[in-house]
Length: 290
Image (cartoon, rainbow, N blue to C red; front, side, top):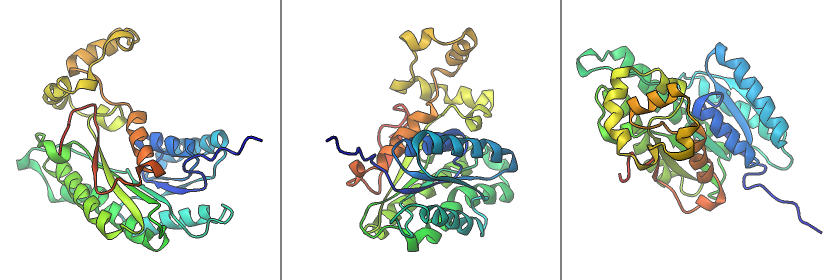
């Protein structure tokens, strides 16, 4: 008789911050497709309906448990709200216990400002969400992480952490801090979970779509030299004339959210058990070494 196929993350409980849109939504989809039960965090009221629809679709499509939780990552009460939601979800899974298997620190904010115009308020806003938020969430989840090295923590970093892009003193600094925390956590949590960062470059999301023409022009040389950002053949032919003009102006294409999610999902599987403390490049070759 054929045996039951066990998906690589079947029965696991995963938290995805910012899990209802952009890269976060793609990660939620990827983890669900691998059998994980997913807690989708969102921040604003305007994201509630979109996140709920996604959660319901993933539950129906993949036969998993999902829940959504509104919390502003970086606020002092947010981590507890998210962890409590994960524990409620875990209680619905037979024989699972109070365990949180996977944490994806995806939620983030960005703004580009020249050095002379950076304000304390903007500095605090970005560091609060991009650095303090992941720290508080992992702290809150510590009692519930696995004790057999099967846990997975993945932090969404950026090529901005290493490339010194103009006007990214603050944003680049937050992502460099996140990479530093990744390495420290990989050592401190070595008996509990692997901890890795993933560093996308430009990705086709609302966040990157909102950047200025001037910023995209400055990014052009980086995009042109990234081997996987070139668009040719059938991929080029499938584009509209408007899209082709945009690609020519930008020097190539952005990554797609599902391409980033695929790397994140791989790091959450047993196949990645020997990878920790790493910054894994998922940027089309924009960054090839760290």
